[in-house]
Image 1: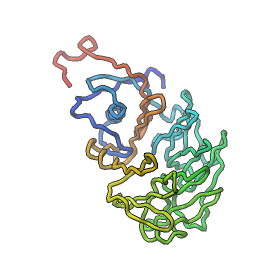
Image 2: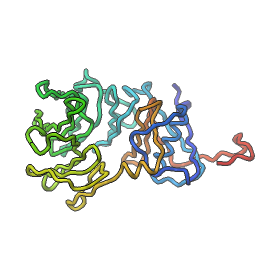
Image 3: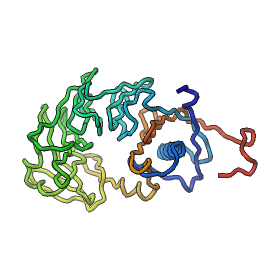
Image 4: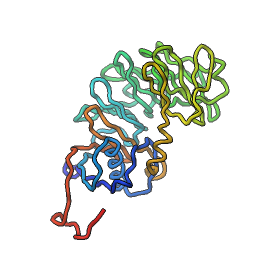
Length: 314
């Protein structure tokens, strides 16, 4: 596909209809190009661009450009500037020009990659359905979850404890969810080793940098702290994230704020819509079939000379 055919414009709707934030998962039943325009518009709004009827050029990337698959879970930029893009069928790394794809043949425990994280030493780890993998600069070293733990799948949330140590969320079956501790290349059932965590579905979302207190949420998005064998509810929710300011936990109600400011966005009944702003301020957005990159903050104005009717309004 020629480059000039991949550069498009994104129209901005009226200010009062623009959402404030974009969720990572949402639903839409619109044509492909319309959905892409909406997603880019939302991403631009979240980035703080001025609101008016404007058109922004963006670049479209698909599997033709080297993406292993286009159903994106999220995006991450490492300390070296590389963009890592987990998908449902492989992992991509983008250096600003080209994509490099990584699959099971390159050391991943599974092609379904949920997240990429960077530890304190700058080591890149991929969190996959069947376990984690460490990047050695060329390929991945696989650490699959052993069958003896009875894990059916690993979730896409990883809480970094320290170098090469994580708390992972995993499912034994539909009803049973556990926490896995990955440390020094091996896995332990953290839930089984800590009786206070048994019998309740909890997802680890953060760990305090000062005292290693683990923060978790339940199915109702209530927040709990776990330390020295004691599990305590610390917020009635809804909570989806925890940040630490001067060592104190700050509970974020991202789900509630986003749900009240935007309409839902899914692609044809259930795929992911992702927005991301990299370290250079570039806006990215993902749909079912493509990844979009904003090419410029400059906007293009269209009028009657470009073929618009005289009574056009928006």
